[in-house]
Image (cartoon, rainbow, N blue to C red; front, side, top):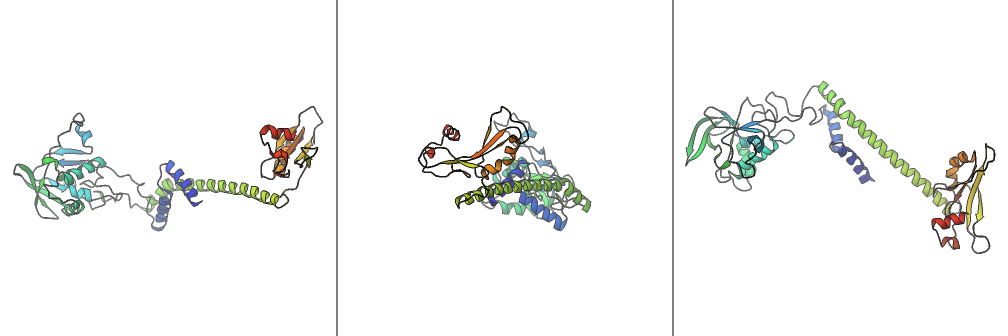
Length: 362
């Protein structure tokens, strides 16, 4: 039952494109305890286009026909110059938003997902030999780059015909860095003053904060419709479960009462032997009534086969009364059900086809 109820709510929630219902419950608890808005709903993460210092990689045979913007989305290319303010690619890959996406050097948003993968590949895979990155220690190298903060290019030179940019870092020692040699890119140009980690340059925290009015507006606009939807789903589920319980209880209680020698509902009609002339008796319980308000007319009788287990003939009382107002209506229990005989030794049990059942009734 627990798995079934979880599956029911989970499917209905996922069908609407929402997060899991238990995540919604956790967010509601967080809102009630701390007044924080719903995560990720006040403002979607903006995307920041970055400037990579160096010449773009040469296209492959498959990407030759693509324009540069499609090959490397979310970035432009620029030759390094003295005096530029830069940030190391490793720091951007290590500085994550509250949703875990790498942030751009200007803290105006997050990097394009594909570009972030390419920058990581260019730095850690292509630069494995040139930057002396040991296998299995890529994350430690990224943390080392993250401590550099911002820097300024003081000179551009070449060592063994490999172009380097000499950068003086605010958080580390001056060092030489690659700008495109063998598809290794280490520097991104900084356009604006950099904010604190986890914040945009205007000091607004990604996905968080806001006044009480903003929190209340977010709750009413975002969470309240979900709460009403959840409430409706659960109400429908419990109503469905209650209906199943009521049907099962009625069937079971009547079956138990019949098994111990009587029925929960008394017999309304009479028992008629459907195979007179000897042998084991097999009686059908039939109840007929008609013309309770109208005059007799030349109309055929209406025969109703009672529902199995649900009180038998008694369950058909309202339907029978409505028909019997203007004609003859008979209800009966099939052999072995309700008040009809349950003697399996009778020859009537040999054939239980629809034709045989109709013949026995006749």
